[in-house]
Each structure stands twice: as structure tokens, then as C-alpha cells.
Image 1 (tube, rainbow, N blue to C red):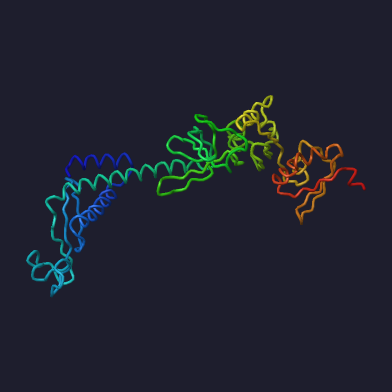
Image 2 (cartoon, rainbow, N blue to C red):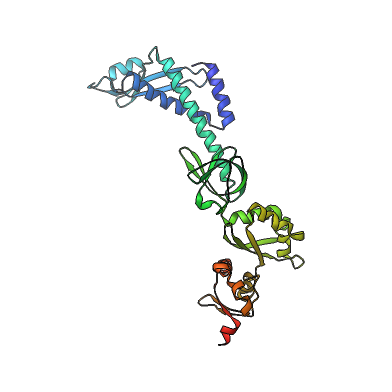
Length: 345
């Protein structure tokens, strides 16, 4: 060890944001293990590294006793006081036992610890970086596909897009640039585990926020989203500003804003409706594009009984019940739909 090592260590600590004392303590702990491995483990030892020069010294720690029964762990009061008159029974005496050949072992172990700490620090930086991006969109590049899992390069880290988080029937090819939603970031011993999604409703929300200035400015709010990935999404929007059309803001001139989101989602249909605090109004809007003739609200059971024109029944229910299912999820109400002729019979 030498001053050059200390200078390099100082720079590493500064660059990686690792406290210098933490690094020294880790190196000293590693050197204790290295000493015991190479020179026996019967005695208590500690290692001290000089913070200025990098010099390493090993000390056997012995307890001062009246009568010595184990000279590896104990020292007599008489012998201890030859070293210093201050020692009393029960004190611990440090006696230097640094082997001549220990320098090479120390250097090798110190290097291993430094490399390990750098790796840990870098993982910590990546973890904190992605933790701040939870519930946000990032752009990644498809690296490869393994057993239906899509591995995505996010720059500083790699994430896996599992089948459950993929858009059904969406193709992923090597080198594709895709936008993904960061669902959660977990800390693991192997570095951050980043859970990403293309099917999460949050992806739709963030895509609209990227396209619609009124959402970014808080003039328009997205109150709820219900989504069946790859097929259809319903989104309820609201504004306090009477001069702003929240639906029109999200649709954009000639549908440009909503079309940009649809393109990113590979053609997924998107219904944008006006949110309302009045259940009748909100449920009616949620069933769009179907027309509603009447609606009866059961507050206790939270059921909305809806009557629609006969020719609108299939539209209101939707293919395989999708329209009414998404409307129910969007509003939080159970929706029963009846045709006009059935309601009169």
C-alpha cells in the first residue's frame, strides 16, 4: 500500500459518492478475514490502515489478566505494564503482529473490496435514478426475446417486459425503440430490478400528458382510465375552466393528439369522455358512443340501470360486452343495460 493508492481511493470516493471512512472500514474488515485465512484464526486481531500513507498494520488483541491460561488471547498484568503503566486487569492490549509478507495479501484484498464497493455504489446510483422515474415513461431498445420475455435496454440498466405486461399481439423485434411505463423499482443484491409495462393504464395517461399541454399545465385532469390493452381504452377527463373543452383538448385539432397516442399503442381504440360528479351524467358519457334514453341510479347497491334505443343495444354493450365492461370500470358503477322495447314490456 502507498500514498498513490490513497490518492486513487480519494478520487474514487469522490466520483462515486462513497464516504471515505466507509471504504476504509470495509477494507480493514476484509483484511482481518484475509489475515485469519492465511495466518490462523485462533487469536483476536484487528487491522488498521493509515488514512494518509496507506500503511497496514495487524494487531493481536489480548485481554489483561492476573493469570494467563491462553496466551493467544490473554496477557499478564506484569507484561502489559511493561508496555504501558496505564494498563489494568480487564483492559485490551493491542500488540503488533504484522507479517512481513502481509503487504501483498493486503493490496490484493483491498483492491477486491474497492471494486466491490464501486459496483455497489453504481448499483445504488442506478437504483435511485430509476426510483425517481417510477410511474413515468422511458424509451428503451429491444435487446432480445427469451421465452416470450422481452429484454429492454434502458441505458443504465436492463429491464424485462414479461408477457403479462405486453400488449397482446404486439410484435417486438431486436433494435426496436419502444416506450415503456415503469411500474416499480426494487432493490436487489444484483442491482435494481425494474418492472416495466406496455399494458398498464398509466402508460396511456403519461402518453397523453406528453401530447396535451393542458394536461401538463394542470388545466385538464385525467380522472380515471379503464383499459383492455391492444383493444380499447376509455379515459375520463375534467376541467374547472369553463372556457376549456377537456375532451377537445385531448383529441386535438383534427384528432392529432389522440392519434399520436393511438399510433404509439399500435392502433388501440381510445374513447375520451367528460368526467362528472353526477353518476347519471358520468355513466351516460362513459357508454359513449352509444346513446342513452334514461338511467336509474341505485345509490345503495351502486347499480346504474340504463335504457337505450333498440338499435343502440349492441353498440352500448359492445363486442363481447367490452363497451359496458370498460364503462363500468371507468365509473366504478355496475351497469345493467336494457333496450327500450324490453323496458316497456
